View 1: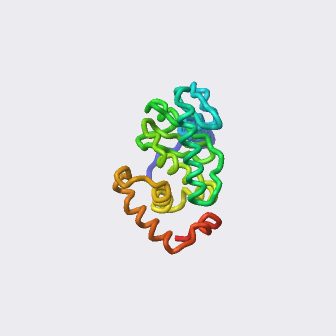
View 2: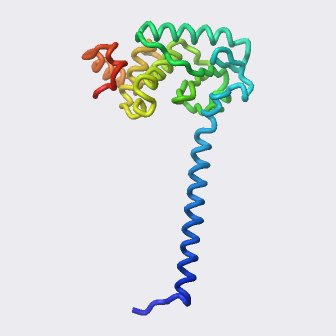
View 3: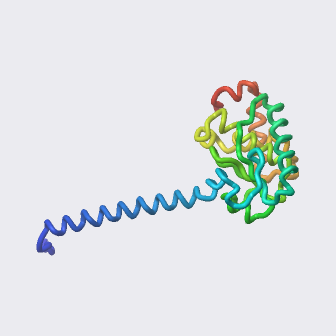
Length: 204
């Protein structure tokens, strides 16, 4: 077999090692940049005031005139979830946005509300319905009782089925593809004690 041999194998080897090293550094930097870009918006929940929001007791809004109404909604939702579940809702930052620009600035997309473990939750305007707030609070109970990582590893029908079923969302305002998840969760829950559900990891 006839091949082309480098004039100096040692130099070639050093050059390849250098290229691999630079590629490794580039890949690491790219990964770090991607992770940072992904988390940058949700991380704003740590200090919503930097975007000009008005906050009181970890409830934040765009317009200060809406703050009292938002806080009343959140307080009522917390009480209702705690009475329903017998559990204490952990402290969290809740941002109630009036505009899509505000919602997207915290990492929201096409959904109507979203929770970010360890950071908080964002509700999109004009969807300040009490059951949507309760839905996110139930997700926070899941994070608190099961662990955020463990919760995200649970089946979607369990996570979302529970949140929809326990939040009291009206049927007309539940996306069709979630309906089977709610039915499956309710069937699963009928075989269990709700109090015990919060003290141990669920078994499927």
